[in-house]
Length: 174
Length: 228
Image 1 (cartoon, chains in turn brown, cyan):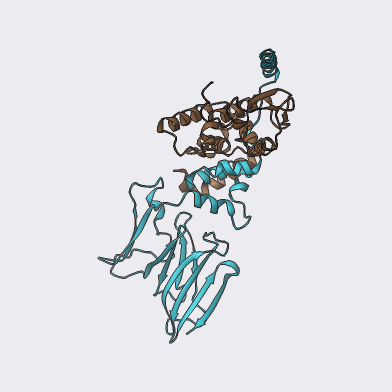
Image 2 (cartoon, chains in turn red, cyan):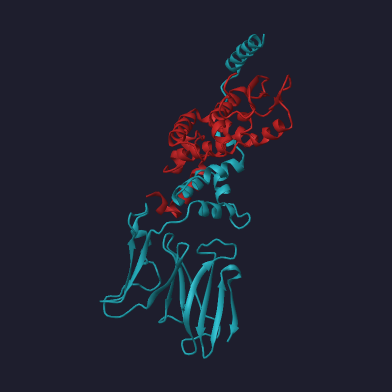
């Protein structure tokens, strides 16, 4: 008899669910990982996503979904422990390292990710990406922010507004 | 069999990923509530001000006047304000008010808090006093009173950073002969935010009887109440 796997309350193989991206790619993941999404959790609790049926996610493409699932799989054990009160410092440091590396990606992926996280109600992922984008904004001047985030060049009207703002709030630009 | 099927799925996934052109989602594609979430992560009000200058949409999100400037209020509760210094109001050898930065210094130039733009000079070095005295500070504004300038304005509220001020006359029947403010406090405007164009004052004054009065920039009305 095999020893029960740690963290698995089902005494056997973990329950799997299938998610289908907008471009019709099927992803099979553990229900525990998919349940990080509040939206999916309800469907899964109702018994959805198993067997041959998949849960269609018409707003999330396969590239984004695979990234979302990478996050969920990594974070599922800690989430299963109810925010992991007994997690070791090493575990937490490892998750932090993972998070930092995870958001070290192309900006357009970041924006797709935060929209998917919002859509699927994965709060941890949503705030992780929000913080990353905020990190790209902080400490910069308006022009630097525009350049960093790939805004088009300001129109003369926008430039005039920016100048007026900087004149009024000069103290914020020193 | 099961493994075979899974492998086929995997292959299909790899091909699909390769065929999908790289996504070109930009910051303009994300909805307002997510943009709001991102901007709420900015811990310093300086960063928020710069973000507000970036474009019209961002400014709209930050300065939204909905539900009493909900965004700014939430930002303030997430990132509580820090004290950047204090005013030192001294009377010897002559009356002067100077700004002393706290340590470690905030990233704002301390000279920005000079009160040298008020209608009567703060520092008078020929032995006379200008009369301005600091009564209260709140929300970046400074409230001063001047017992020597009743007729112009007994009280003045100023915003050192934008160098603007607003004089406030006493109640209509309040004159240097009849009245004297006992204490005055600077409060948030009615919507819970505060600026040089939106604040309230609560004062108690003496004109033979003790009275309380509330001044609000909304409607520029002076409400006199509670006679005791």
